[in-house]
Image (cartoon, rainbow, N blue to C red; front, side, top):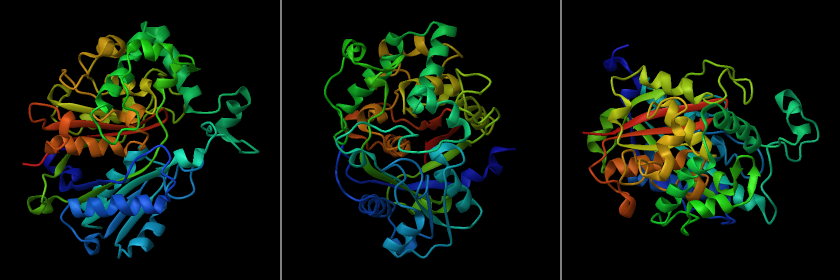
Amino acid sequence: MSRAELLEHRAVISGIGQSAVGRRLNRSGIDLTVDSALEAIADAGLEVADIDGIATYPGAGGGPGGFAGPGTPEVQDAMRLRLNWHTGGIEGPAQMAAVINAAMAVATGLARHVLCYRTVTEASAQGGGGRGGIGAGVPQMGGTLQWSIPFKAYSAACWLAMNAQRHFHEFGTTREQLGAIPVNQRANAAINPKAVYRDPMSLEDYLAARIITTPFGLYDCDAPVDGSTAIIVSSADYAPDAPRPAARFEAVGTALRGRPSWDQFDDLTTMSARDAAASMWERTDLTPADVDIAELYDGFSFLTLCWLEALGFCGRGEGGPFVEGGRRIALDGDLPLNTHGGQLSAGRLHGFGHIHEAVLQLRGEAGARQVAGDPELAAVANGGGPIAGCMLLSRWR
């Protein structure tokens, strides 16, 4: 397929918005969603009446308390939208499915301006107690969970810790190397006014934190928050009229070529990131050397390490030495990584915060954390384990 034929080239991100973000805002999901949506619509230079499509992940009713956010019918009704197309669902290339689906809807003429959003109220839902696992409160457990829940592997932290242990065993990766990711992201979060954790953190602080599930310590795990992020996906012919520089979809990665399993993938050190990344590079003449910034999913620090390898920024098994010491991934390094602090320090906005940050960086609007040198190409990745998606975004010219 030639680059001229790629459907994603017919779409752009014309606007972004984000509600307040905090540990316990005690506001409803629909309240936060409307805030982010209105900001994104205004950012794109549009009116509410211009929105004719809507997409979200995962849609109403999925996951533990505060995870799902409002479904598309609820948002459509609250904002009185007149839609030609809408979608929501948990299956597909992770959280990014909503944005990629929106780009395809725009490319095929089903809609012209699509509101994509991801809203979480996990921190308020958590209350004063601890963070619940995926199986929490479920009286009967079928499917693959019947083989993990009885053995106290309650959550993705437990499952991915085993993948990390395999990487440590096979390639000699160390906790000191892995710790460079959360330490770097905390430094970036310190200059992000919306980040929930901004206090300085050293590698010694990271290593001294309590172990959650070996080899993950407290700071390897993302921070549940309340917040909403919205993105407007528009037809590319609108880009010249948008009040701010649009972000162009250069290529998307959506493949799943291994088993869709947390623990039965053929290579437990790579998982589905391997396939999504491969399919993205198959759709472009660009290479990892062309990428200026990387906003890579960090539900757990190890997932970011996996994405660095899968996307070709380093070789398979070389993620530990690549990030060691944090020099390469710093704001002024060779590959600035998760420049807003990521989910480990800025808060778990479930992948959409990474897209929001990539657009800010490409526009040159990231404030004190803006990467120097006028970045033109961003790699963005969401998900990990059994499902994953990624994309290359470039600044519209």
